[in-house]
Structures are given as C-alpha cells and as structure tokens.
Length: 256
Image (cartoon, rainbow, N blue to C red; front, side, top):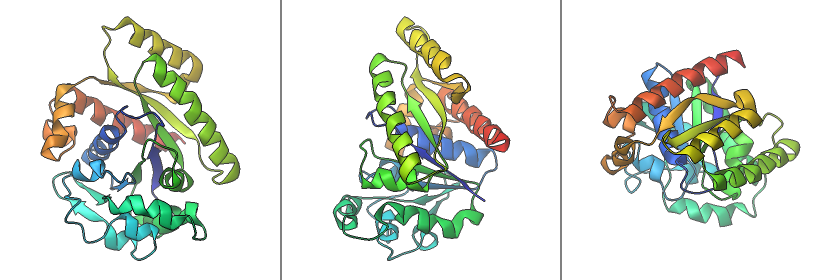
C-alpha cells in the first residue's frame, strides 16, 4: 500500500521540484516503486523526469476531470526508473473547471485510490500557492515533506504552511501531518544558515530530517538535461545526499 506525500512550501524557489524528482529517483534507486505526480501547470517536474510535457496524450488534468484514470495517464520514465503522472499548461484551466464540480478537493485522492497497491511511494509536486491544485494534493496525502532553505524568510513562510496544514487536517484530511522538514541548498560556511538550522532543530526536533542537501551545481544543471541530479550525475554530492534522504525516508516510514 503506497504512502502518499506532498512536497509543499508556500514560498517559491525553495527547491520543491528538485526535491520531488530527486527523491523519486533516489527511492527508485533503493528499490522502491514510485509514482511522481506533477500538480504544477508549469510541468517542471514532468520535464525534469525525462517526459516531454508537450507530447503527453493524457495528463493529471484528465485525471482531475475524471476523463482518464491514473493507470491510463501515468507513463514510465525509463531513464529515471519511476512512473510520472505529468502536467502541462492545460492544468491551469483545471482550477476554473473544478470550481463548479462536486468533491472538487478530493478528485486526486479518489483517482489515486485505484493504484495504491501498485506503488510504495506516491510523491506529489505542489504549486507554490495555496490553490485548488495544492488542496487536492494535501487532501490526498498522508503527510507533507517541507523543503526549506535555512534563511530568515523561510521561517516566516513555514508558519503559514503549518497553519494551512492544520486547517486541512481539521476540515478535510484527518491523516495529514508534517512528516519532516528537509534542509536544502545548505551552505555550512554561512553563519546565518547554521543558526537557522539550529533554530529548526530546537523547535521541531525529530521532525527535521537528519539528511541535509548541500548547495550543488550539478543538481542545478540536471533539469536542463531533463533528468534528476541523482540520474544525471550519481557521484555529485547533492545526488548522494538525495539517495541518503531516500533511505532515511524508507526507514522513517517503516517506523510510522
């Protein structure tokens, strides 16, 4: 039975998509069956998984509007080793179209229920805003993984996200919880980053993952080749950190 996780942060540019595709590739590398769901109309996670968003016959848009099943719309990325339920610009229209329909915030949860036995992990890449798409992700998920930079403004954004998760938990999804905070783009030479990292650990304790993802050029280069860093350059420090994070995730889930 698959565990479903949203990778979410209401602050933009914190590495949500990089985290999603590299965690998916890392989990695939350690023998897990993974489905990556792209809920962002920009389709960056789709392209970053070696799938051309312009060539897809079916996408997550069709799944949300119930004109296709997940099994029909998901494609296997040979290079990356996991399945992709991709997104493209069509998805922007889903926001408007879902406003009038019943169970609009539960569409993704209902669709994923049919494939949970086929995967060990389902990872959902959410847009940076709290939209109907993000709400679908949060309603479908068992937990939220929050990638964050160790900077002052990141702490501000985290407060908003925690409040949002509490609201969704109270009203729409009793299973939803923060699984953990992942420190990304980390540079230990910067004193402020070290201080914010210490604050996070003091406040959130074991909710902060032990693995830290360093700032790494190879991870930044990988999307231009349509690959996660873990596949593009397995020897890079950032790639090795994501594989270590995948192992930590598997261990943490076993203990839940």
